[in-house]
Structure formats: C-alpha cells, structure tokens
Image 1 (spheres, rainbow, N blue to C red):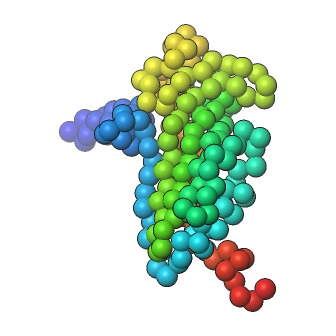
Image 2: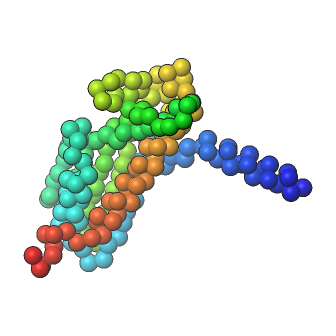
Image 3: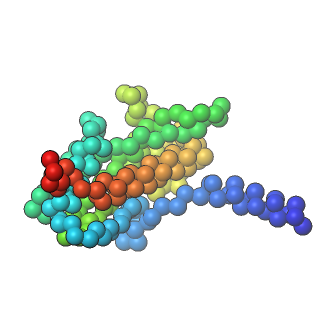
Length: 186
C-alpha cells in the first residue's frame, strides 16, 4: 500500500509540472496579471512618483516604449520585453527569445493597481531571429511543435510566469517604500 501511495505521489508531482496556470480574464480570454494594492496614507502623487522611479530603474532596455506617463491621471503604461529560456535536451538553459508585454500602473489615493498583459513570444534574441511562439495563451506555439516542442513551449511560458511574478513582487516592494522625493531629510 505504501508503495502505491509513493507511486501516486510521484505521478501527481510530475503531472503538476506540465500544467501552466495563467490568470485568464473572462472577458478578453487573455492572460492578465493584476492586483489592487492598498497603502495607507500615501497620496496618488507619491505613488505615481514611486511607479515612475520603479519603471526608470527596471526598464532601461531599448525595447521599452513608454506609451503613457500622465501625472494628471497618475497613470503609467509601458510596452516592454522580458527574455525567456528553455531547457535543452542535453541540460542547461538557453535563451528562447522573450515575451513582449504591457505594464500598466494606475495610482489613486492610498492604493494602486497594476496590470501586466498582452504577452506575445518572439524568437528574437541577440539579433538572431529564432522561432516565435505567439500569444502566451496558446497551447501550441504559432511556429509549430517542430520548431518549439510542446515541452519547450511550456517551459518558456513557465519561465515568463516566474519572471512576471518576481516583477510584481519587486513592484510591491518599490511602491511600499518612500522615494527620495518624499524623504524630508535630504
């Protein structure tokens, strides 16, 4: 009986690795990582300044385009790129292009909201164009499974999710700390 339980544990563990869980929006059918974060006693202006500093510190790539940076509405919208990797059959991780995505940060009194969406995989990396997988919601890559296997595609998508989760955690830390502008002792 114990051997059966151990066997079932291993089977369920391995099958869990194959599942990619995306936060799919019911209206659009697209993956959207979003959250509203309350912060007590912080003005919309200060939150907006913190968001601008976060974007400035974390998005220095030539692939980042600022679409909106509106102080009046306390909104920042950027289109950017994150590099992803896949595991090769011989072991080790290799660049697999990356995902273009949109980051939106909306600031109001005592709270802010972020949305990370519009994930499109492109095979471009270091001026070398590899196969492109398309939208992260795809079960199979747009280029077909001869170019990117299903296993590689799942690994690429999971790598993107891991990076976006870290990004959202970094954003929360940055938004909860006072910026230099807010500090009175400088």
